[in-house]
Every structure is written in C-alpha cells, then in structure tokens.
Length: 391
Image (cartoon, rainbow, N blue to C red; front, side, top):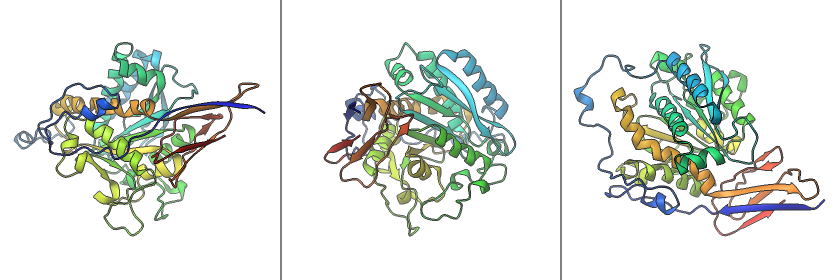
C-alpha cells in the first residue's frame, strides 16, 4: 500500500525563562512567539496584599458559587452556547455530585485531527478560585467567538474541555480532601512508589479522571490551585525523596509551556521566590501520587499545575481582578497547542483512510505516540537537533 503523509511543524524554543523582578511587560516574549500583547504593566507579585488583613471574614464562601449554583451555571452555559459547546459528565463525587465538563469546539463531541486540552479546577476543596475562573473562561470564549482572532483559533483548531470542579464535596466541606478526607492530588498511580496502584481502591473522583483520559487523548492540560503564584511542571517527585530539581525527558517543553503561562500573566513572571514564575515540582517540594506526573506518564498528556493565588480562598471581591490577571495566560496556553509543536496526519493514498503513525525524536528518551482512530494528533517534544518521522 502506498502511503502519503503531511507533517507541519514548528519547533519549541529551548530555555525560555523570564527574569523575575524586572518591570517589564510580561507578554513581550509571548508576543514574539505570535501571541497577542495587551500592554499590561506589572507592578507587584501579590494580590491585594495590603487589603487582605483589613477585611476579616467569618464566611469565606460568601460570593463564591455553591455546588448547586455551579451546576446551574454549567448547564445554562450549555444552553446559551450550544453552537460551539456541549456539556457532559465524567462521573460523580463521593456524595453524588456530578462532575460536569464543558467541551468547547466548532464541532463539539466529534473526532477531529485536532489537539485536545483540558482545564481542571478545584482539585483541592479549599482552593476554589479555579472553578470560578473556568466558568468565566468558558463564557468569555462564548461571548468573543467570531470577534477575537485568538478565540477563533481556539474554537476552530482545539477541543477544549473544562472541568470546573474535581472536588465539589471538599468545597462544600471547606477542606482540602474529598468527602472521605483523601487528598485527590496524592491518589494517582506513582512512578516511584506504587503503593496506590489498585485502581478499585481509589476515590471516585480520581477514577473519573483516569477513565476520562483513557477516553479522550489529551495533548496537554492544566489544573488550577491556590496558595502560591507559580507554574509548576514535572517531575513532581524523585526516587530518593529529596528536594531537588528532577527533570523529566521533556523538561525543555514543560519549561516552555510554564513560561507561556507565567509571562502572559500580569505578574507571575516577576516572582522573587521562583525564577521566571515557574518551578520544577521536585525542586519546590516533592509530591507522590500526583495528577500531573500521572497524566504525563500514563496518558502522554503534558500537564502543568498552576498556582494562581497566594491566598487559597481570597475574598470573592478579588475574583474579577484575578480573572484579568490570568485570562491571557489561560488563552495563550491553549493556543500554544496550535501555534507550536508537531502537527500531522497519516493516511493511505488509495483509500484515504487514516493510518497509525510513529514519530521518533533524536536525543530524547521519551516518545509520545498519539493514535486515535488512526489519526496522529498534535505532539509536543523538546527537540534538540533533528526530527525523524517513521510511518
């Protein structure tokens, strides 16, 4: 059988690290890569640091959506924006709350040779900002489709999946863990210490994520957390359990993705604690059983852990500002799947049927193979010298 194929690619740049502390436009480097520059001026790292102590609150949930309100908001979005979205469930929490996902695409629910990206919010119950920002993101995309070129690129060229809350039970209980008081970001299979490799023993929220990744071959993803201001990337742990930089095979690519988020953010890249506003997980503090490393190892999905607020549960009045600080970061990170990387389709010349394919990268000890209905989806690599494609 004759085979014809096309490969379109642009290589990831290496060592994309911003210098923290300078009064610069955080999007200057992002614009050089083809991302929009909205002219933000960065002044400080912390949000409302002078005001937080002046407004003590007894009800920290005031102004945040309840779980019922979140479910209503997701379903209302699905009705309002049905032309470019669908709403579906990947399972239920311990207490039976549906884990609803919004998919945004020009052809939602259909298989296409396009990258899939997922956002996951509220992994920890006491870090609720992500669930609010993800609803804002979905609505902003809906409102600006056919108006904003970046939004058009995302809708037309990416399948975006948004899970606003992975841990609704923890949110309602105002605690980190789920209803069984299990930290969901320690509940995934671990490459170093396989103490939790019995899938049946995992939490329903964890199993839902694992089944979701088996069903949809995500190219990249990010989970939204709180308690710091930094973009975190693998590896999250190390074999010796020591706190030190432990690079994964695609370290350059992860640094690139993390830098896109950090430098597109209002002030993340100016961090005095983390150079360029990014960090290797194991260099910060080791985590085992985390979702980030599991996505990369078992799903071939390039996941970041995004710490988006110093305060885990900021006053709800700050949410509009936090959204503005993170909006371009979120959009640019999704768009990077189209603007960079290796893109390809493989099909037979006689029948035009999709075929399986393999791309090998020289000088890297990892190959991410995406084969879904015979279509090679977008692949990301840290490319040093050359690419050789084998089909």
